Length: 522
Image 1 (tube, rainbow, N blue to C red):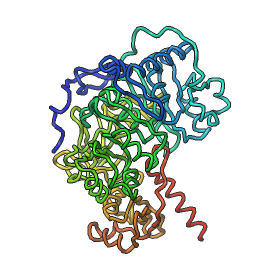
Image 2: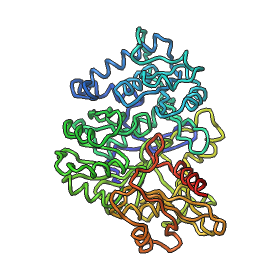
Image 3: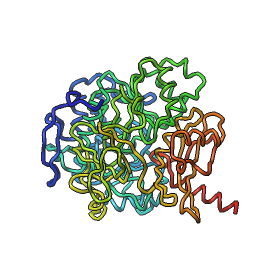
Image 4: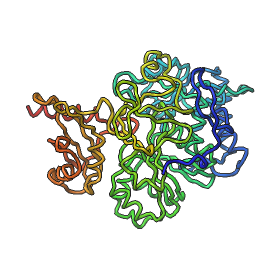
């Protein structure tokens, strides 16, 4: 059931970043901008980028990217300079990434939901010489950085472009992690990393120039940059951009543009199913629904499969530090293996390590470590964090996982989210997988609440799609789990769970809200 090497380009071992020897694709581009050049040369007149009235061919997209690159060069941008990019989902964001890369400079995309203080930190930490924005984000720019800011629409001028591309081990992007435990760190994505991510996605998702991809998640996150923008450019597929996900407009767009592929969080698919007219929608071209960030409820998979004949699914697990979703469940097995996040792609390695730094036997929990040509060198100007998170070419994920004998990996918890109930370890992801199998549950987040006797107890926060009571959900847990894992308290509502800027369920915010509400009652 695991990935077959013949589905992917040929691999051979190479030395990367001085101290790593990893399998790499033999025949590959060497620069992020090469992805654009390839499709522009191969199919100049095929549609590349669509949003509203904007429809650019690959030749037209390359021409616009070169125009913006010449204008940035006229403003003094040079190789190695960092450019903080604050833009909503729009063609301008895609154009900016390729334009900055064309000058061998470094893009630093950041969330448009960030505070001014967060923007100031990233601007200072990255040493950016310029902030490129879309006009809508001017209010988020700190006063100290204002002289460096310019709106994309105001760029003018022309200067020569560099003749030689940057080396493939040079940094192409600095992406700042979500920072749930302190200030965010900047992961350095080299050209070789992003190229491998694009090639992996192209092969795993069977992407071709005939695909039409809707981008409904934030493009400024690693998923948007690697899985959508870079992969579309590599395959010559058309990228159809939404400013933000709204269920009705998404389905309208899917019909009008003959959507074939999506990569979203499970909550978005659930919202589609809640649309009364969903069964009557013409989605016959939709071939693959990929997802990550949370378990896909079993009822959601069944209902989507029934409503869209031939639709396949792919569970994906990755991070900013791995760029690609390094663990993906092969689509034909997504339903049967839905409790797993996938198995390692060819040329990459996923191992589960115990607390003594030894590989855990199959089925035993430990920390998930990942290696491959997609894993970043480290964190920007942060050797301490790099030394802590990277070892022997592996990135230590902080996720508690278990692997079966076939190499399929099950995520049990984030190490910081594991619940210790009187010395008994409870993995929240295991509980969430069970709870989301209930037909009434849209989303679930399991967190620890303080207990003076046991230290911590289990609390479940549930977003309901239809009516259900606590006893119904507790019975499901008792049927499938040890008794000490069954939640002892519940929060049930029809409101979606709180999410961070990257669209992932924000357990820290959920926990803080719950504690604040509890304090008010006391």
